Amino acid sequence: MDMKLSKRLLLKGACCGALTGLAATAASTAFVSAAAAAETAHTAVPTGLSPDEALALLKKGNEDFVADKAPVLHIDRKRRLEIAEKQHPFAVLVGCSDSRVPPELLFGRGLGDLFIVRVAGNTVGLTGLGSIEYAVDHLGTPLIVVLGHERCGAVGAAISLVKEHVSFDTAIEAMVAPILPAVLKAQTMDGDLLDNSVRENVANVVARLKTTGGVIGEKLEAGTLKIVGARYDLDEGKVEFIA
Image 1 (tube, one colour):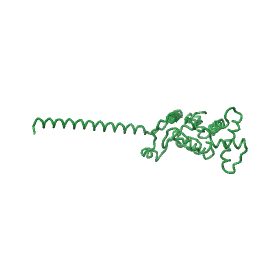
Image 2 (cartoon, helix red, strand yellow):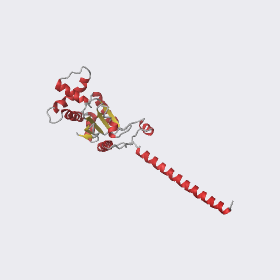
Image 3 (cartoon, helix red, strand yellow):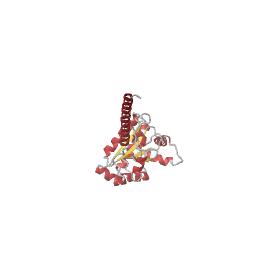
Image 4 (cartoon, rainbow, N blue to C red):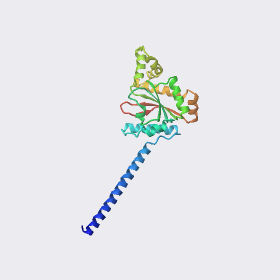
């Protein structure tokens, strides 16, 4: 073989090898950068949030939900291990049991972010109140959101009881009883009775929590806790903060 040709082939091979190596390095760097970005995206919500910071997170999450932006949820193995021994939820969510109103999805949140208390009609009984107090006192949660929703069946049942004297021979009657004051007030208002009742029911629960005293009252007075009401629109996917 011609020596010059051999040298040219050797040099060509070396150059190709170097380029291949550079390409591999670049690809490796890009992969590491992407992995780092993904890792950053999965970073847990920091502890020590103020009530307003916690509320801003929920609002942003719902804005993304309405816009059909896929959230980066904290649901991987790393996140499970992070919260296995201790939890730091940044919001208590008092919501309805309705299958169309899943709190984590509406706000784009993952494991360990929300402390959820759910019952049809989003009312708060004694055990529910105890759960809320636990989150506020022992977990340091700075925000409580009472979330009602459009066309709530429990509120509709309460309306049927008030207007049509429908009798429920089950525990449903006890379930809707706390909603009745909201319906009675909504009857005096203009507009849609069901939607007004939903909003009044949320306002009543918020008012009850704000006047319950104890650790909740102490933290409200200190400014380290906020309680707000909200209404979820089933059609639009939007959460409107109303109280």
